[in-house]
Image: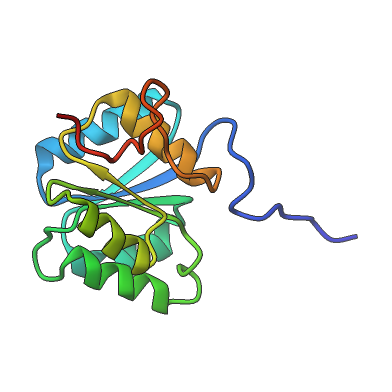
Length: 152
């Protein structure tokens, strides 16, 4: 009798493996600490060219992707991820300072699961990651607006 392995994108109650793709070490460290405190296992890469090899080795359940990366833009990285069969189904949460509704539409159309605007609160980050893992759109409890919407 063979071992039955559940699908990687099952409903997540606890720990998930998250790959942070962020060139700013301070932001990456903050994101890493928030996600580790939430019970996740986290790895980090700072360069767009390192994403696919890192993802193939780490096997994340979710990728948090900045758009402004050295060597390769976040949109190019997203394209790369979608072209590698072993990585194409990993949900991607774009985390960017280049926020606008148009940017959100572009990244969703390019294959991201959702987008989150920088700066963000720790609760928004954790909620967005959990929503993406569950296959849902992240929605703020108080406003009914997507978590990635700018607040004015």
